[in-house]
Each structure stands twice: as C-alpha cells, then as structure tokens.
Amino acid sequence: MDQAVTAEGIEQAITQFVSGRVKAEVPADEDLFASGLVSSMFAMELVVHLEQAFSVQILGDDLKRDNFRTVQAMTALVARLRGVEQPADA
Image (cartoon, rainbow, N blue to C red; front, side, top):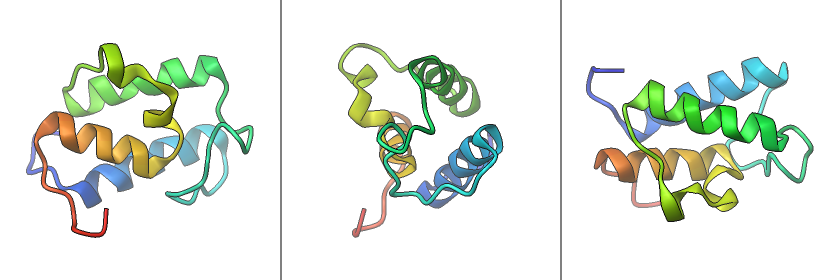
C-alpha cells in the first residue's frame, strides 16, 4: 500500500481482509472479540497482516487487545503509526 494512504482507505482494506477471513460482513464498529469472530490466533494474524500491509511496526503498548477490538480501532492504530490524519469524528 504505497499510494497515498487515508484513514478511509485503511478502514476499507482492513474491513475487506477481516470480512474475507471470517466469511461475513463486518461493521467497522463491531467488537470482533465479543462476537466470537476473532480468536487469539487470528488476533496475531491481524498484527502480522497490518504490519505487512501498511508497513508499520506494532510493538509494546500498541499490542493491547483494545487496538484490535474493532476495525475502527485497527484503523486508528495504523493511521497513528503512519501519521495519517483522521477525520474529526474518528
């Protein structure tokens, strides 16, 4: 993902990846852990995917579950790590 990255583009890419893996539509604000869509093994896969897809390193405090609970949370994490401006309502 080398072209200009936007928060919207990040969210779309993450939604597409998660929906493809769980074979279901996933709203951006759905709690993936509470819904049972994400296991701890899939959570680790998400970390690796985000690092590779967006050229970021997720380390230390950023590895907490809350950063992976929803597509919105993952979008905010990646946007912050990449220095992407987020919409005012995010």
